[in-house]
Amino acid sequence: MLTRGRLFLVLGSAALLLATSTLADGKDSVRPGDPQDAREPNVQRLHREVPDDPPLPAPAWQPLWPPAPPFVFAREGYYSVQVNVDEFGGNIPADAANEPSIAVDPTNPNRMAIGWRQFDNVASNFRQAGWGYSRDAGRSWTFPGSLDPGVFRSDPVLDADADGNFYYYSLQHPDDEFFCDLFKSSDGGETWVGPIYAYGGDKAWFDIDMTGGIGHGNFYAAWDHAGCCGDNWFTRSTDGGETFDYPAPIPGRPIWGVTTVGPDGAVYVAGRYRWDESRFQVAKSTTVQDPNAPLDFDFAVEVDLGGTLLYYLQYGPNPGGLLGQVWIAADHSDGPTHGNIYVLASVDPPDSDPLDVHFIRSTDGGLSWSAPVRVNDDPPGTDAWQWFGTLAVAPNGRIDVVWNDTRNSGEDNISELFYAHSTDAGLTWSDNVVLSEPFDSWLGWPNQDKLGDYYDMVSDEVGVNLAYAATFNGEQDVYFMRIGDFDCNGNGVPDTDDIDSGTSPDVNGNGIPDECECFGDLDGDNDTDQGDLGILLADWGCTGGDCPGDLDGDGDTDQSDLGVLLADWGCDAAS
Image (cartoon, rainbow, N blue to C red; front, side, top):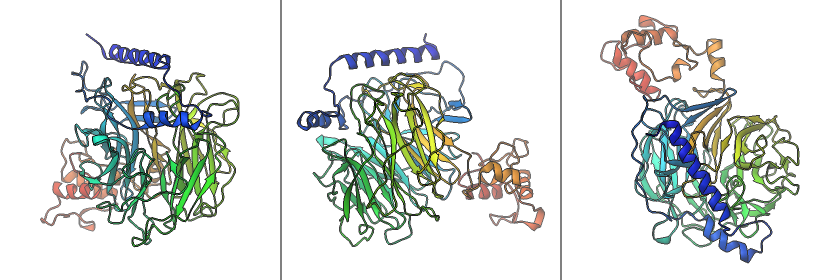
């Protein structure tokens, strides 16, 4: 009988054997410098998300140990909480999960959802739209299963609108055709409606306008050339994702990048130039925010990131996938950096390092760009891989970056998660901080030689909400990490400071302000009743008739009133 540890060892060994055999097979490599006519067929074959394998059922599994708490891996105060877990919060052996994307409710930062590519059986690369949701700011997660069970889906991208609705953009490939569907959740990712046909294609990313301007609520999506509509790679929805405009071309032909909306409603698309991995493009439109305007762009400009985008090398930390995509983000702060546009990617620089994280900025709406700045602070010539560079900008203008890094191992397949930030528009960067234990990116490949193609994160004024993939269990799993203190009430003040100052009470001493927590039994009598409501009211500095007690209008201050209070916080008395 296999014990838990032995099972992980068997899975890990199998993955390493797969990695060894794959690298020895002599598959066509896609390397910078190859003639374009030799390289492009390989790109067409390798990068597309197609159902090569039939779906396989999840391996039969019965827990051989008592139910475990949520899987958490810690390093120096940073906690990685597993998202794809069973009903007891434990790992599900022999599956795989990668390419996570995260949405955070701007009206209630305790409500989050993460989507990912879910492989029910690591022996098959048939993937589905996995998802999980959290009600406690990512401290624990519920994984209900696949969004559309039995349907091949890939490239998940999630976002939230200004009203707290969540959206899940998902690639399909039926009948040798690429297109995307959109799903919507109005309850923080617990349930979803859809699918809604949304055009799209491979490596599609979207953003939602939350500027309050003429385009407020618009959706904008862009993808690479493997899509529904030939060379038309950009679409828009002006009715909250109910319908989408027929796509239009993007000047500069950027691929493998993302879309962002500036504070003035302008739309930017960044990516690698389709025909040359050493060239990068940023396209801008100031007019698509107008629902009555056509899908036209003002211009596209070539930008220099100081290196080459690597992909599908058949060697390195992610042999069968991207080493990162091209990120673009806008500064929505009220300070002097308002309106800046930032671009970041993991690129191969001219020196011996295989990959560094490089950053550039524009202070004039994308017309001109700075020279590239190296974010990782290991000495040049370390020959380390800094891959999956990921960018987000906080509402106060802080720039956050994470990436995988092999500097401490010297091995292509052994990485740690790193972080750095800038508070001066990227002129200078903080010392790099290691966030995770080492993990082997060659473990748990689901009949694909990669850990997916990207991570994703959302920044707020206090910290960062990150969704990433790693192999701490000896297989590919999706994790959530909070970088920095929590800010459960969204007031821009760390929860610890709110509690220490007395602004927010913390009756049970768990470090979570009471107004943000979903709990019922505050006085320890094993009941959620009037006594607990009294504690809550006392925490607010009131007693008896001095404060609202009868919230449901039944003439009594009782358990149902506590339920009303908790429901106002997006939870119930039993949670």
